[in-house]
Length: 309
Image 1 (cartoon, helix red, strand yellow):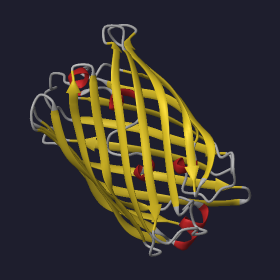
Image 2: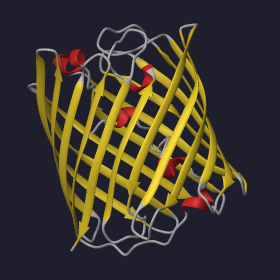
Image 3: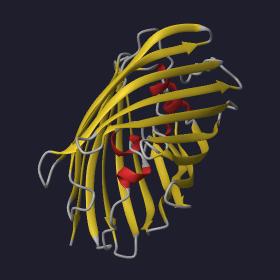
Image 4: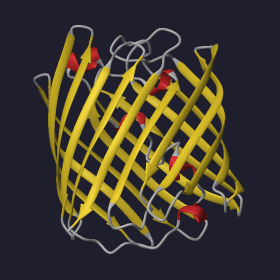
């Protein structure tokens, strides 16, 4: 798990779409096995490799096992995790929860997450995102640091073509630093039939005890970006999602350019066999937990499949 880098609602793919574009029929629950891998690399040379596998019963209960390898220069660390999971999807609400333990570099800690969303009406959804996890930077891993995060999430359809997403909350790091954060995402439908959307995203946060050496933690960070998203079905079995955005990031009063781009291929949401592969890259300090110099870049890739039986 590395959910600190991702809010409950994502900034790419379906997470940028308005409610009307993502509301689809529910698939009857079936037992399933899943497997996947998440990899990343940044301009500091910090590399992450995280394969995982999961069993899920028709009741929504399941068990997930994961392995982690971190490396940088001549340093490396490994970890493993085991979590009890539960997922439920209805016309009115959905949630995904997991709770268990992670052992990394000799430090064993409780970890888990809860992402829940309740549909209040045709135009409004309200939710919460909770997470406890390890701080996956070199110094954070060596010190055995963790964080607890809590976010409130609102998704509001303001107009048939315009939607607003808001996430607000805090992250409490185990080295006595608190990070308060507010994110917004405005999405405008350019051409729904062809899958074209424009969006503006903003982010503001501050650290109560800044400049910690274990991870990137300025006193204040503000950024805003303008982007374009294309998401459409290439065939009846393959959906493509691509996005690119560019903007400005201000860190403790000093501005710099920020951008991100991503490309994903996946199955349709109602397909029996679910799969996804994707690649994303960004110039964005806030994508990292590693203290870093200017010009930071972060690249990640994902591959996963879910097979019912």
